[in-house]
Image (cartoon, rainbow, N blue to C red; front, side, top):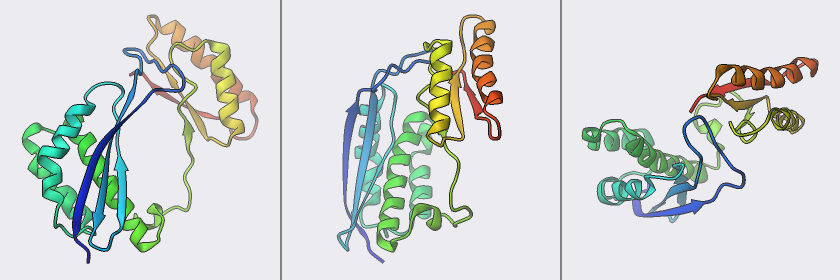
Length: 203
């Protein structure tokens, strides 16, 4: 077993490549809190989580002041035990977004470290119930996109092998949402054997 000897916390801000909008907000910036955990064998695991424009600095502060100090000298392989202990240590802040984002960055770093040390992919470490999963596309269904572009993006997602496409809903009138969804659904029906699923998100 190897103990955690150092933890690095940083934040990377990423501007979205395309405009992203839903019913209540526009995605301005991906604030990406990152954690690098190194064990006594010299192996490093990297994890991250993200916000859509606010709160990143608060996540970093929570990591630096309250969570990272509890990681040092722990057995790096005890991923589940560490998560439980860290979760309890911040239970007074409730299970809110900032806490969850901070814990996720640490947890994914520890899983990455475990995977690098064992040489196994994550799905094997998690039990290997499936060799693959079907993914869906998230970049084409923003609420500001017109019907024709929605259809075009759904078609592009299908051609690239995605099993579905996510469409945002929440227009001022429900008839606008129905019209947009119907346009994509007609495409799905017309595409023969395996139509795209549509994932609806109103926020």
